[in-house]
Image (cartoon, rainbow, N blue to C red; front, side, top):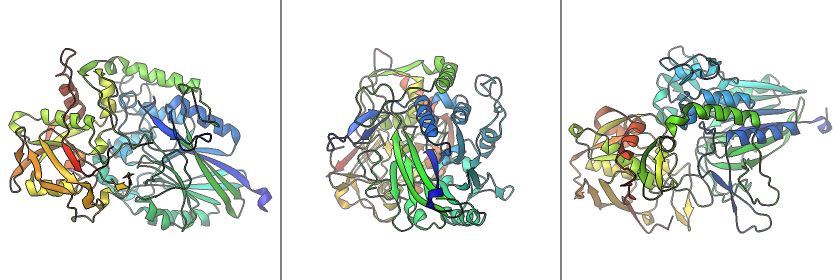
Length: 581
């Protein structure tokens, strides 16, 4: 056959949906305006019913289409999904045509047994049927699509937990998918215990070669790992400044045509100059869908490939740049979303407290991605809530959470509902305390800007390197740091903290390097040293407090009635020579 016989295959991809069946509050992306190229246009995006319409539109363009996911369809989900043990999201993904997904790190949040139930079906043990589980006709059939996990070994059986590959035939050509999740998953969730995660590139190459030997013409990797660029608008194919753990993985691949990535909650369409591999990621929370098109010659392989990231534009967008059109909701999916919405509506709508001013989650300029290297007011409040939840007998000094523990903000002053709080912190983790010395605390703070926490998410503001992950602190820890000393130093070499500025406790006492301080945090940091905050694992006296994070946050907000709303918390961190955020 010659090129005239080539078959065009359309791959529609999403990642990091995290159960956002309803549009996330303030979900927006920036589009390039062809009539005014110097001024990006901010548009409203997201919502499962709108995403279903966009997917349906693309599938109508080509009968040779497949819908795929790069992982984290569930986990850290808002109440509409998590209250059903995420069965709502699994059902709706199947209904909108999802055909295959890799397992993301958050799919493991409730452990392998629960994840296998979501794949295979059955009601969740200990949950009320029709309310908390099996909420659709009193049953749950499991995912209508297979999960893949080519690099995840069950230590009990020494076998793969899920299949490694998935193939689909389109006319005379076959496309093979390899599903791999990040090797660092055990550092990102407690639910990965009892599992072994193998090297991503080695596993991909082994299965890609095997698929090619079987006659598969195209190999696409679904990889729950990613990077980031410095692009200011959606679909910037110049792929400026791509960095992250995804880069060396892609550069080490063979027999692979394209990689659909996730995990870092970024958006990009790139072509690796070394391998020619097409690399994509579609933002998060269902805000964007990737439309990838592979032209394949039977028996020969891929002869051309391209991709575009498309915003999931809501009907609330009144004015859009030329070339863009708002979507209407898919009626069937919207009906299902509303049904799940009603199940938990009463509980979610209960007012838990009042705030005097908005408590936003700060995003990177011209994006809707969380700025990881800044202080979020809502992060301060969560940390204060964690500290307040510790019994007096614990004698806790400080509370700390990682920026990934802030999943949203409170955009408006006034009443705050359970639903809003759950959207801010939807994890359901127990809170722990652990003791660190003053010296260890300084070392922990330096890890915020050392090389491991600067790799995945580049950030340059006014030509200043602002990469890193800033821990969110209770009011009992304040300090200053100097960005001019240079983020991105090797592990153990950071020296950005101005040690003499560190103050501890309600009376702001100077730090004692030899003294032990008791820190309240979540298991992700306390037990796993997650997000490369490995100093936590050097601590002593680790103890589960028996308090759930959302319960601590709710109890804290209950302190602030309408007559005495929560005032804006004071900043805890001062940056010398930092540009304005």
